[in-house]
Image 1 (tube, rainbow, N blue to C red):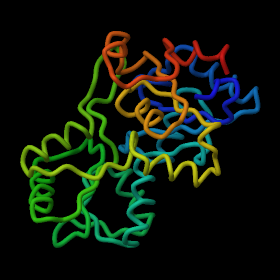
Image 2 (image 1 turned 90 degrees about the vertical axis):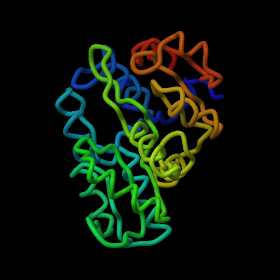
Image 3 (image 1 turned 60 degrees about the vertical axis):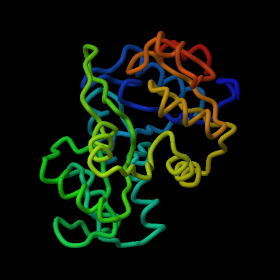
Image 4 (image 1 turned 135 degrees about the vertical axis):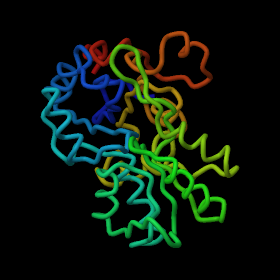
Length: 261
């Protein structure tokens, strides 16, 4: 663990950490300003693959946060990097939004609706249909390699509400096929290695900040990286105390972190 005042870069989750749905969490903008004022940097790192970098820049701008595309890294981008190392230009059967489809197409993949794909990739598909799930299950059951952008069960919204996330879709497919995917996003090493390489970061001077124990905080625990849990999203204090996954720091929100960075 590295003391927060010695951290040079913060990997910041977004949903549940900086905002809930379309509402900015109190103090989030002040927290980001404090990081910049101390000549440190942050990267917005999200498992939510329903949007690409451009869409997240637009969303952050709508909340009053100016962000550059290079300051955003999604599990969708991590998935394109990972799969391109295995088979560039592969044929992909993708369960994802239009934004994720664009990201895969721009990375050189051929997206197919029928025929024999090289890979099935599951993202946070907010327009998911039964026919798409059915087709994916058929391919997966037939042995097509299967990847998922992230394992989050729920996406937190304003007012304490949640919407089912990719992890719930993984559970559906497993119930039908008996197979689980290779998961790219947090807490897996694939996304962390891609970030450290792309931005030339040292893990000893990098901290991950988020609201989920089983993704954000487990990433820090498994990868030997300093972690800070915020209780503004999915995890509450009771869940924190019960969990075997422990963070280096626990705060009510990112606003409470400001004096420590």
